[in-house]
Length: 251
Length: 284
Image 1 (cartoon, rainbow over the protein chains, first blue to last red):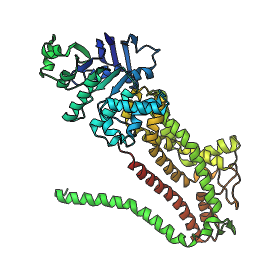
Image 2 (image 1 turned 90 degrees about the vertical axis):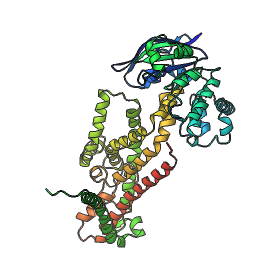
Image 3 (image 1 turned 180 degrees about the vertical axis):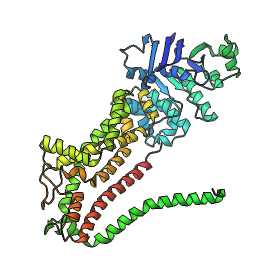
Image 4 (image 1 turned 30 degrees about the horizontal axis):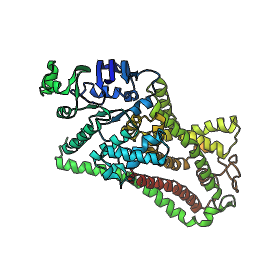
């Protein structure tokens, strides 16, 4: 069953045609990787799925992105509700300059999802446990989040997303500012989270895509070149460009 | 032309650059030195806290001090909220279109208008048209218009210094644009906005021309009762006792200048302390 159906989707930055007629069905509760060389539009595609691209001036789109059967580019869609359902983790860990607790509770409090202090406390605990940060942070909840290591900060950012109860988590090169050990840990976390969330990850690192994803999409110059089971993409792709890219002949 | 060796030209350019920097310090030191030297003998507690006497040749300058403070504080009270709101609009909401460009152009030009022109504007609009009379409120309104572009510009700088990634993180949690500004952008920009506001207070404390026609009185030996009263102000008082009063004791003139200087310097020092204090808590 597919959770996200992208149909004939085009995106323009003012006059630049960044995404060209993308069609892709992303499966529920699977990890889908989007790979491709820099500037191919993979981040743009990811950022279209929670409409965070809306904040950039001059962006306009055509086509549809359906999540659970609803077109998120429909005028009646509440972008706030959409973004709570489709969480996003960014390239560089970007915790707010607040305490660890306030970071995780931020979405709950500001969106007024819960007002009961006990429920907020519980949700903070559950979210930090889900990213395996609770044991470390439980005595430091009211310390600044900026005192954490980069890897812990990235975990915290994932916990912050999980707290508002999304179904889909988008990750935009979440390990690109981490060292190999930290990368391994975050990858392990993604595999764990996968039975609860539909995960879409943009990555530069092909080994990463091979390690953690079920399906892989390869993009080039704004077009979706090939989309298939990860195994197939990396061992026996149908299209020559895909083969050239995954075998390291360019990119 | 003589070719200097690289080593010598290095030394020479260092010397020139260093001397240029020293030149900037000398006038400040000289001003402070001369004013303190000539004025300190007249600077007593009584001078700060009593009314002028004998056609301003004796007594104190309390009404001028309070007059300046009341006008300046009213002005910043008026201009800060409006300036911050405008800065938020321009920095967070405005799209890059013709209207925005006209607004930005207007702000830049507003900052370049000579202060005496603001004085005339204040006289025309607030004193005469709105019939506020020569009063604290008319002077404060005039100063607040004059300071508005500066407040907007510094507030925009402060808002801009909040990393875009914070906004993106907040928006991606489904938080609305306004709430993002309210809970993330503003708290982090506040130190910069406040520092700018304190410096604005320092700047407008010494302004003479805008309040000359709108608020300042030649001689009122009592304190104002309301914001619709005319008041004495320090810069104007200094001008009067320096040029209009014969046989004015010299040390009283310098002591008045010293008080004005101290108010301005205190504000600047406050701004510096605030900046250091806030920087300690900012880690990004």
